[in-house]
Image (cartoon, rainbow, N blue to C red; front, side):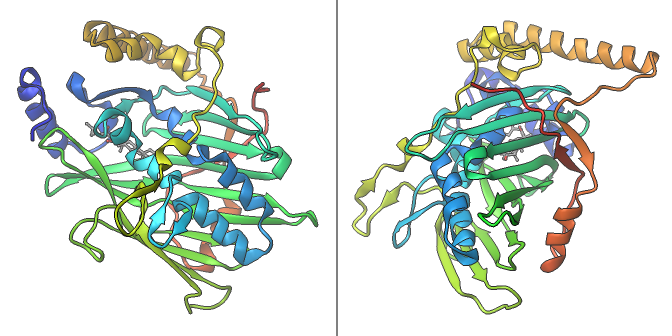
Length: 383
Ligand code: 0T9
Protein backbone atom coordinates (compact mmCIF):
# COMPACT_ATOMS: atom_id res chain seq x y z
CA UNK A 1 0.00 0.00 0.00
CA UNK A 2 0.94 3.65 -0.29
CA UNK A 3 2.18 5.16 2.96
CA UNK A 4 2.10 8.75 1.71
CA UNK A 5 -0.73 10.79 3.26
CA UNK A 6 -3.04 12.12 0.52
CA UNK A 7 -2.31 15.76 1.36
CA UNK A 8 1.45 15.22 1.01
CA UNK A 9 1.41 13.18 -2.20
CA UNK A 10 2.49 15.94 -4.55
CA UNK A 11 5.22 17.19 -2.23
CA UNK A 12 6.48 13.60 -1.89
CA UNK A 13 6.59 13.21 -5.67
CA UNK A 14 8.51 16.46 -5.95
CA UNK A 15 10.89 15.34 -3.20
CA UNK A 16 11.55 11.98 -4.86
CA UNK A 17 12.24 13.73 -8.17
CA UNK A 18 14.65 16.05 -6.38
CA UNK A 19 16.47 13.06 -4.86
CA UNK A 20 16.69 11.38 -8.24
CA UNK A 21 18.40 14.32 -9.90
CA UNK A 22 20.37 15.58 -6.92
CA UNK A 23 24.04 15.04 -6.40
CA UNK A 24 25.51 15.82 -3.03
CA UNK A 25 24.25 15.86 0.49
CA UNK A 26 20.71 14.46 0.67
CA UNK A 27 20.33 15.44 4.29
CA UNK A 28 20.09 19.09 3.21
CA UNK A 29 16.94 18.54 1.08
CA UNK A 30 13.62 19.59 2.56
CA UNK A 31 11.24 16.64 2.85
CA UNK A 32 7.47 16.44 3.49
CA UNK A 33 6.48 16.17 7.16
CA UNK A 34 5.31 12.53 7.23
CA UNK A 35 8.85 11.27 6.55
CA UNK A 36 10.63 13.41 9.18
CA UNK A 37 12.18 11.86 12.26
CA UNK A 38 12.59 13.94 15.43
CA UNK A 39 15.98 12.32 16.10
CA UNK A 40 19.32 13.77 15.02
CA UNK A 41 22.04 11.66 13.38
CA UNK A 42 24.28 12.44 16.37
CA UNK A 43 22.19 9.94 18.35
CA UNK A 44 22.87 7.07 15.94
CA UNK A 45 26.24 5.96 17.41
CA UNK A 46 24.27 4.78 20.46
CA UNK A 47 23.15 1.82 18.33
CA UNK A 48 26.65 0.41 18.77
CA UNK A 49 26.08 -0.19 22.46
CA UNK A 50 22.41 -0.92 23.04
CA UNK A 51 23.55 -4.35 24.11
CA UNK A 52 26.17 -3.23 26.64
CA UNK A 53 26.44 -6.79 27.95
CA UNK A 54 27.55 -8.11 24.55
CA UNK A 55 29.99 -5.20 24.20
CA UNK A 56 31.53 -5.93 27.62
CA UNK A 57 31.67 -9.67 26.88
CA UNK A 58 34.24 -9.08 24.12
CA UNK A 59 36.79 -8.06 26.73
CA UNK A 60 36.41 -11.22 28.79
CA UNK A 61 36.51 -13.81 25.98
CA UNK A 62 39.34 -16.32 26.45
CA UNK A 63 41.55 -16.07 23.35
CA UNK A 64 42.01 -14.40 19.95
CA UNK A 65 39.56 -16.68 18.20
CA UNK A 66 36.88 -16.35 20.89
CA UNK A 67 37.35 -12.59 20.94
CA UNK A 68 36.72 -12.40 17.18
CA UNK A 69 33.58 -14.51 17.64
CA UNK A 70 32.34 -12.33 20.47
CA UNK A 71 32.93 -9.20 18.35
CA UNK A 72 30.74 -10.85 15.70
CA UNK A 73 28.07 -11.71 18.26
CA UNK A 74 27.92 -8.11 19.35
CA UNK A 75 28.01 -6.83 15.73
CA UNK A 76 25.45 -9.13 14.11
CA UNK A 77 23.62 -10.81 16.93
CA UNK A 78 23.95 -13.74 19.20
CA UNK A 79 23.10 -17.16 17.99
CA UNK A 80 20.68 -18.93 20.31
CA UNK A 81 19.62 -21.77 18.07
CA UNK A 82 20.49 -22.50 14.46
CA UNK A 83 19.31 -19.59 12.29
CA UNK A 84 18.15 -17.41 15.13
CA UNK A 85 19.89 -14.24 16.12
CA UNK A 86 18.80 -11.68 18.63
CA UNK A 87 19.04 -7.95 18.41
CA UNK A 88 22.41 -6.35 18.08
CA UNK A 89 24.22 -3.48 16.40
CA UNK A 90 23.05 -4.16 12.82
CA UNK A 91 19.42 -4.36 13.79
CA UNK A 92 19.63 -1.13 15.77
CA UNK A 93 21.54 0.78 13.09
CA UNK A 94 19.51 -0.29 10.09
CA UNK A 95 15.98 -1.38 11.03
CA UNK A 96 15.11 0.25 14.34
CA UNK A 97 13.29 3.23 12.76
CA UNK A 98 11.09 0.76 10.89
CA UNK A 99 10.35 -0.93 14.21
CA UNK A 100 9.63 2.27 16.13
CA UNK A 101 8.19 4.59 13.46
CA UNK A 102 6.91 2.24 10.75
CA UNK A 103 9.54 3.08 8.12
CA UNK A 104 12.96 4.59 7.66
CA UNK A 105 12.67 8.35 8.25
CA UNK A 106 14.77 11.38 7.47
CA UNK A 107 16.88 12.15 10.55
CA UNK A 108 17.62 15.68 11.71
CA UNK A 109 20.75 16.98 10.03
CA UNK A 110 23.22 17.80 12.83
CA UNK A 111 24.87 21.20 13.11
CA UNK A 112 28.65 21.54 13.39
CA UNK A 113 29.68 20.97 16.99
CA UNK A 114 26.43 19.26 17.99
CA UNK A 115 26.99 16.89 20.92
CA UNK A 116 25.34 13.79 22.29
CA UNK A 117 26.30 12.25 25.63
CA UNK A 118 24.90 9.31 27.53
CA UNK A 119 25.56 6.05 29.29
CA UNK A 120 24.34 2.56 30.07
CA UNK A 121 24.64 1.75 33.77
CA UNK A 122 26.64 -1.03 35.35
CA UNK A 123 24.51 -4.15 35.86
CA UNK A 124 25.53 -7.64 36.87
CA UNK A 125 29.22 -6.70 36.86
CA UNK A 126 29.29 -5.73 33.18
CA UNK A 127 30.57 -2.23 34.00
CA UNK A 128 29.32 1.16 32.89
CA UNK A 129 29.40 2.09 29.22
CA UNK A 130 29.65 5.74 28.17
CA UNK A 131 29.12 7.48 24.84
CA UNK A 132 30.55 10.78 23.55
CA UNK A 133 29.42 12.01 20.12
CA UNK A 134 30.35 15.17 18.24
CA UNK A 135 29.35 16.42 14.82
CA UNK A 136 32.82 17.14 13.45
CA UNK A 137 31.76 18.32 9.99
CA UNK A 138 28.55 19.79 8.57
CA UNK A 139 29.44 19.85 4.85
CA UNK A 140 29.73 16.92 4.29
CA UNK A 141 28.07 15.61 7.46
CA UNK A 142 30.49 13.59 9.59
CA UNK A 143 29.76 12.29 13.07
CA UNK A 144 32.57 11.12 15.38
CA UNK A 145 31.98 8.92 18.41
CA UNK A 146 33.75 7.27 21.31
CA UNK A 147 32.20 4.51 23.39
CA UNK A 148 33.97 3.04 26.35
CA UNK A 149 33.64 0.66 29.22
CA UNK A 150 36.55 1.59 31.46
CA UNK A 151 36.18 -1.25 33.92
CA UNK A 152 36.40 -3.81 31.07
CA UNK A 153 39.09 -1.80 29.24
CA UNK A 154 37.23 -1.82 25.97
CA UNK A 155 36.44 1.08 23.66
CA UNK A 156 35.10 1.85 20.22
CA UNK A 157 36.24 4.91 18.29
CA UNK A 158 34.91 5.85 14.89
CA UNK A 159 33.31 8.25 12.51
CA UNK A 160 30.48 8.11 10.05
CA UNK A 161 29.85 9.96 6.82
CA UNK A 162 27.89 9.10 3.70
CA UNK A 163 28.01 9.50 -0.04
CA UNK A 164 24.62 9.06 -1.64
CA UNK A 165 23.42 8.46 -5.17
CA UNK A 166 20.17 7.34 -6.80
CA UNK A 167 19.80 4.24 -8.92
CA UNK A 168 16.85 2.15 -10.10
CA UNK A 169 14.43 3.91 -7.76
CA UNK A 170 16.62 3.37 -4.69
CA UNK A 171 18.97 5.58 -2.75
CA UNK A 172 22.45 4.06 -2.65
CA UNK A 173 24.50 5.03 0.40
CA UNK A 174 28.22 4.39 0.49
CA UNK A 175 29.36 4.79 4.05
CA UNK A 176 32.60 6.59 4.69
CA UNK A 177 34.56 6.13 7.86
CA UNK A 178 35.07 3.06 10.00
CA UNK A 179 35.34 2.09 13.64
CA UNK A 180 38.20 0.69 15.69
CA UNK A 181 37.48 -1.44 18.71
CA UNK A 182 40.30 -1.67 21.25
CA UNK A 183 40.66 -4.10 24.14
CA UNK A 184 43.42 -3.94 26.70
CA UNK A 185 44.31 -7.51 27.62
CA UNK A 186 45.32 -8.65 31.11
CA UNK A 187 49.03 -8.52 30.15
CA UNK A 188 48.60 -4.86 29.18
CA UNK A 189 48.84 -5.58 25.44
CA UNK A 190 46.21 -4.14 23.15
CA UNK A 191 44.15 -6.02 20.61
CA UNK A 192 42.38 -3.90 18.02
CA UNK A 193 39.65 -4.60 15.48
CA UNK A 194 39.02 -2.54 12.38
CA UNK A 195 35.31 -2.52 11.54
CA UNK A 196 34.32 -1.37 8.07
CA UNK A 197 30.76 -0.33 7.25
CA UNK A 198 28.40 -1.90 4.71
CA UNK A 199 26.84 -0.23 1.69
CA UNK A 200 23.14 0.60 2.01
CA UNK A 201 20.32 0.56 -0.47
CA UNK A 202 17.17 2.41 0.58
CA UNK A 203 14.20 0.74 -1.09
CA UNK A 204 10.47 1.46 -0.95
CA UNK A 205 10.93 5.17 -1.72
CA UNK A 206 8.08 5.54 -4.24
CA UNK A 207 5.55 4.14 -1.79
CA UNK A 208 6.74 6.44 0.97
CA UNK A 209 7.80 3.52 3.15
CA UNK A 210 11.57 3.42 2.87
CA UNK A 211 13.63 0.62 4.41
CA UNK A 212 17.30 -0.22 4.32
CA UNK A 213 18.81 -3.28 2.72
CA UNK A 214 22.52 -3.94 3.23
CA UNK A 215 24.56 -4.92 0.19
CA UNK A 216 28.03 -6.19 -0.70
CA UNK A 217 30.39 -6.88 2.22
CA UNK A 218 31.87 -5.43 5.35
CA UNK A 219 34.90 -6.61 7.29
CA UNK A 220 36.23 -6.96 10.79
CA UNK A 221 40.02 -7.28 10.87
CA UNK A 222 41.69 -8.11 14.16
CA UNK A 223 45.29 -7.22 14.97
CA UNK A 224 45.59 -10.92 15.93
CA UNK A 225 45.15 -11.77 12.25
CA UNK A 226 41.62 -13.15 12.50
CA UNK A 227 39.36 -11.73 9.80
CA UNK A 228 35.57 -11.76 9.47
CA UNK A 229 34.04 -11.16 6.07
CA UNK A 230 30.33 -10.40 6.26
CA UNK A 231 28.42 -10.75 3.01
CA UNK A 232 24.99 -9.14 2.78
CA UNK A 233 22.05 -9.88 0.54
CA UNK A 234 18.35 -9.19 0.36
CA UNK A 235 15.32 -10.64 -1.36
CA UNK A 236 16.16 -12.43 -4.56
CA UNK A 237 19.83 -12.89 -3.73
CA UNK A 238 21.70 -15.82 -2.18
CA UNK A 239 19.19 -16.85 0.46
CA UNK A 240 16.21 -15.12 -1.12
CA UNK A 241 15.26 -13.56 2.22
CA UNK A 242 15.44 -9.95 3.28
CA UNK A 243 18.33 -8.81 5.52
CA UNK A 244 20.38 -11.97 4.98
CA UNK A 245 24.02 -12.28 5.83
CA UNK A 246 26.75 -14.85 5.76
CA UNK A 247 29.83 -14.25 7.90
CA UNK A 248 33.08 -16.12 7.26
CA UNK A 249 35.85 -16.20 9.85
CA UNK A 250 39.40 -16.97 8.74
CA UNK A 251 42.42 -17.46 11.03
CA UNK A 252 45.67 -15.45 10.81
CA UNK A 253 47.47 -15.79 7.50
CA UNK A 254 44.96 -18.23 6.05
CA UNK A 255 42.01 -18.14 3.69
CA UNK A 256 40.47 -21.41 4.88
CA UNK A 257 37.18 -20.64 6.58
CA UNK A 258 37.00 -21.73 10.21
CA UNK A 259 33.52 -20.49 11.12
CA UNK A 260 30.48 -19.72 8.99
CA UNK A 261 27.53 -17.93 10.52
CA UNK A 262 24.45 -17.15 8.50
CA UNK A 263 20.92 -15.94 8.93
CA UNK A 264 18.93 -12.73 8.94
CA UNK A 265 20.37 -9.99 11.10
CA UNK A 266 17.06 -8.29 12.03
CA UNK A 267 15.04 -11.32 12.92
CA UNK A 268 13.05 -11.89 16.02
CA UNK A 269 14.19 -15.33 17.02
CA UNK A 270 11.86 -18.01 15.81
CA UNK A 271 12.28 -21.70 16.09
CA UNK A 272 11.82 -24.11 13.20
CA UNK A 273 8.06 -24.25 13.74
CA UNK A 274 7.82 -20.48 13.60
CA UNK A 275 7.14 -19.92 17.31
CA UNK A 276 8.84 -16.99 18.93
CA UNK A 277 10.91 -18.52 21.71
CA UNK A 278 12.76 -15.41 22.72
CA UNK A 279 11.41 -11.93 22.18
CA UNK A 280 14.58 -10.13 21.28
CA UNK A 281 13.02 -6.73 20.76
CA UNK A 282 12.80 -6.27 24.49
CA UNK A 283 16.48 -6.80 25.04
CA UNK A 284 17.89 -3.56 23.77
CA UNK A 285 18.67 -0.95 26.38
CA UNK A 286 18.04 2.70 25.64
CA UNK A 287 20.86 5.03 26.47
CA UNK A 288 20.40 7.28 29.52
CA UNK A 289 20.88 10.99 28.88
CA UNK A 290 20.68 14.06 31.12
CA UNK A 291 17.27 15.75 31.43
CA UNK A 292 16.91 18.22 28.54
CA UNK A 293 16.86 21.28 30.80
CA UNK A 294 20.19 20.29 32.32
CA UNK A 295 21.84 19.82 28.93
CA UNK A 296 24.23 22.31 27.38
CA UNK A 297 23.15 24.43 24.40
CA UNK A 298 24.99 22.22 21.87
CA UNK A 299 23.56 18.97 23.13
CA UNK A 300 21.34 17.40 20.53
CA UNK A 301 18.05 16.97 22.36
CA UNK A 302 18.20 20.48 23.80
CA UNK A 303 19.25 22.07 20.51
CA UNK A 304 16.46 20.37 18.53
CA UNK A 305 13.88 20.36 21.32
CA UNK A 306 11.20 22.45 19.60
CA UNK A 307 11.79 20.98 16.14
CA UNK A 308 11.34 17.52 17.64
CA UNK A 309 8.24 18.63 19.52
CA UNK A 310 6.75 20.01 16.31
CA UNK A 311 7.45 16.78 14.41
CA UNK A 312 6.12 14.57 17.21
CA UNK A 313 2.96 16.58 17.73
CA UNK A 314 2.24 17.32 14.08
CA UNK A 315 2.89 21.04 14.53
CA UNK A 316 4.93 21.44 11.35
CA UNK A 317 4.88 25.22 11.47
CA UNK A 318 6.71 25.08 14.76
CA UNK A 319 9.10 22.45 13.37
CA UNK A 320 9.98 24.43 10.27
CA UNK A 321 10.22 27.83 12.01
CA UNK A 322 12.58 26.38 14.59
CA UNK A 323 14.61 24.49 11.99
CA UNK A 324 15.06 27.71 9.98
CA UNK A 325 16.05 29.57 13.13
CA UNK A 326 18.79 27.00 13.88
CA UNK A 327 20.02 26.99 10.30
CA UNK A 328 20.14 30.80 10.07
CA UNK A 329 22.01 30.98 13.33
CA UNK A 330 24.54 28.51 11.95
CA UNK A 331 24.99 30.51 8.74
CA UNK A 332 25.52 33.69 10.74
CA UNK A 333 28.03 31.95 13.00
CA UNK A 334 30.06 30.75 10.01
CA UNK A 335 30.03 34.27 8.52
CA UNK A 336 31.18 35.80 11.79
CA UNK A 337 33.93 33.23 12.08
CA UNK A 338 35.29 33.84 8.62
CA UNK A 339 35.10 37.60 9.11
CA UNK A 340 37.14 37.18 12.28
CA UNK A 341 39.53 34.74 10.58
CA UNK A 342 38.54 31.99 12.98
CA UNK A 343 37.34 28.44 12.61
CA UNK A 344 35.07 26.39 14.82
CA UNK A 345 37.01 24.47 17.48
CA UNK A 346 35.99 20.84 18.01
CA UNK A 347 35.55 19.81 21.61
CA UNK A 348 36.30 16.10 21.85
CA UNK A 349 37.93 14.96 18.61
CA UNK A 350 40.81 15.85 16.38
CA UNK A 351 41.48 14.78 12.79
CA UNK A 352 44.19 12.14 12.78
CA UNK A 353 46.29 10.21 10.29
CA UNK A 354 44.48 6.96 11.17
CA UNK A 355 47.79 5.09 11.23
CA UNK A 356 46.47 2.12 13.21
CA UNK A 357 43.39 1.80 10.98
CA UNK A 358 45.51 1.75 7.83
CA UNK A 359 47.87 -0.78 9.38
CA UNK A 360 44.93 -3.12 10.08
CA UNK A 361 43.43 -2.44 6.64
CA UNK A 362 46.65 -3.53 4.93
CA UNK A 363 46.45 -7.06 6.42
CA UNK A 364 43.54 -7.99 4.16
CA UNK A 365 43.98 -5.16 1.62
CA UNK A 366 40.79 -3.44 2.77
CA UNK A 367 39.96 -0.02 1.42
CA UNK A 368 39.21 2.82 3.81
CA UNK A 369 37.62 6.11 2.87
CA UNK A 370 36.94 9.40 4.61
CA UNK A 371 38.99 11.20 7.24
CA UNK A 372 39.86 9.64 10.60
CA UNK A 373 39.17 11.33 13.93
CA UNK A 374 40.76 10.62 17.24
CA UNK A 375 39.08 11.02 20.60
CA UNK A 376 40.93 13.46 22.84
CA UNK A 377 39.93 11.74 26.06
CA UNK A 378 38.21 14.79 27.50
CA UNK A 379 34.59 13.70 27.61
CA UNK A 380 32.21 15.00 30.24
CA UNK A 381 31.85 13.19 33.53
CA UNK A 382 28.63 11.31 32.97
CA UNK A 383 26.91 10.23 36.17
C1 0T9 B 1 25.22 5.91 10.47
C2 0T9 B 1 22.75 4.82 9.45
C3 0T9 B 1 23.34 5.99 8.74
C4 0T9 B 1 24.23 6.78 9.72
C5 0T9 B 1 22.20 6.94 8.23
C6 0T9 B 1 21.25 7.57 4.75
C7 0T9 B 1 20.61 8.19 5.98
C8 0T9 B 1 21.66 9.00 6.76
C9 0T9 B 1 22.76 8.08 7.35
C10 0T9 B 1 24.19 5.47 7.59
C11 0T9 B 1 24.49 4.83 11.25
O1 0T9 B 1 25.43 4.02 11.92
C12 0T9 B 1 23.63 3.98 10.32
C13 0T9 B 1 21.45 4.45 9.31
C14 0T9 B 1 20.48 5.16 8.48
C15 0T9 B 1 21.10 6.16 7.48
C16 0T9 B 1 20.06 7.15 6.99
C17 0T9 B 1 18.83 6.58 6.27
C18 0T9 B 1 18.39 7.77 5.46
O2 0T9 B 1 17.44 7.75 4.73
C19 0T9 B 1 19.32 8.94 5.60
C20 0T9 B 1 19.30 9.88 4.36
C21 0T9 B 1 20.21 11.08 4.50
C22 0T9 B 1 17.89 10.42 4.15
O3 0T9 B 1 17.30 10.91 5.07
C23 0T9 B 1 17.30 10.29 2.76
C24 0T9 B 1 15.89 10.81 2.63
C25 0T9 B 1 14.78 10.02 3.31
C26 0T9 B 1 13.44 10.61 2.98
C27 0T9 B 1 14.70 8.55 3.02
C28 0T9 B 1 14.06 7.88 4.18
